[in-house]
Length: 120
Image (cartoon, rainbow, N blue to C red; front, side, top):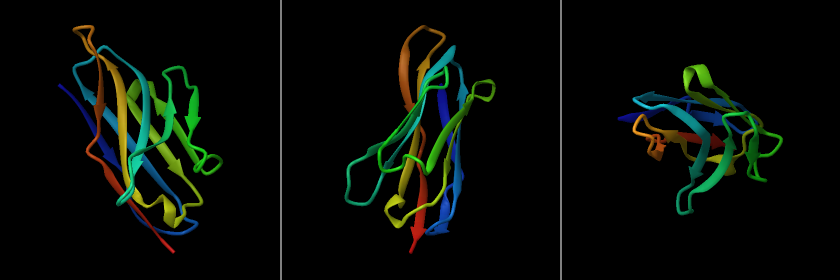
């Protein structure tokens, strides 16, 4: 089985920073894209950022210039550095991985979510 474990959420004041981490463990062959989505209360889940296994990145317009996604392929870990946080960034953040299993099946897996709360 493949598991994603997130860490790094919490409560921060507006203008502050947080760094989220997500590590993939279990039986798999390789990981393609990794990324983060978020869901605020009463809103649909939205894409925050993605990164390919080659390091190409993509960001939602609302976080460009403030958030940075990166990954450590040797550790099967993806990070999200969040700077200049705003109350509108308050949400549960979910990481995901596009994973190639040893059976050569390709599956998406999700973390359990980590709460980020930004106070004004």
